[in-house]
Image: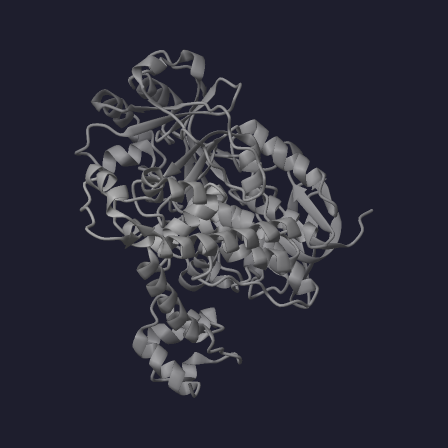
Length: 620
């Protein structure tokens, strides 16, 4: 009935879609198996992509040749660049998405991608032969052969939905959970755990009084995620902000005795940085209000996402509390919020390629690895798809360093440190974040994507042009003399000290509150020169000039860390035979089996002294 596939991807969420698209574009014959063809790329939680650190990941996925950035651009209803008041390392793009169009566009994109086939059915097992994944088994008892398998099961593995005292099996609202895979993986020797996440109620936007809320507009000149020629938004939908209050909190407390979280019915660990509303008022009892973001689900639908009100309390308590929020007095609920508990597999059981250590040619990506978020899932799916294709074609593994991409930071953190709660990316996790900005992801990664066969030649030409234009602008700014008479009026207006003799434009730009546009407006010759270039080249040049010393310092630090990465640990070592290592280091090194000294140094519990012992042992 079925041909043998090169790669079988199980699950069609954000990780599965990127894995299937990447492997197929690289030339593999791919089967994408999902329990429901109508929920491909479903935005299970909030209808948005990007955000702090997450936006950088989406741009990296795009720069490598992935699809999430393009599909976000084609289906967003609002765009904002977050943290513009801070330095460029913190700037993070975020888009409010049309939930239905996002999923539809992903599905149509996959349908139009050569080499992708689909199968709608639950996958209940993996075919393993001689320690290698060679296919999957379905709930109908069908065996489908494949050279590699990528599991991207999201929250579906033995998922349980909690609403008050009610429990039901499910991977998300109105969808059944997946059975069989966890049990088989445990039999194969994998360690499993439980995590939980939650979602807020959805309400009818026609029942809300937006005049009583704060309107949150998109950017005046909206940007986008993809480096391709996608079209920026010409019009946008607003979001709104309102707040809980003491009345809301008191009503919520009446449901605590039926709360699955407080009564111990939920065993899984939830995300500390995105707590439920009941958790917030319990943990932060001194606060009399919490912010609520009112987010439209699309261009035309009246459904609204109540961001900040995630809850698993009884549905009647949720509705009573909602109606005490300003603007929600007459709110009608479409469906209540709920918590979902599901199986995951600690990611220390993976190699940096996301291939499992126990079963060859078996890859895990997304929430099965203990992460949370569409963006974190998408980048793992992309990397798993790339590496599965490379592995079966006997090509070198594709691993990004921590100094190359947030994607590299995420995977390195997961594999070396593991996670005991849903892992979310933050800028603080990246020690080289001044290098890993959202504006230069194409410069960092597009050539790599081109060499993989994911990014096309037009992308590479665009990047090369950006690099050459940026260099030209930097040279101009560092050599262009500016007369005091031309610039002092602007400097005084900006509260910056006037100059008494000529200064190079680049020196002025290094001042904290002076931007390239200020100089361009004051000096017509500079404005005329810059008008020849694309805006992103000008921005890139300004960042390079203004933050030159920081960037140079980061490159130096990255190079030093890179030296440790070059010390390969070629043979498998029984660390129990190195008594000078601490007991914890022996245990952790034995379990992870790091491939380089650099990787070993980032394992939780391995000290600098342990690394010195290891280097002596290896003769380094």
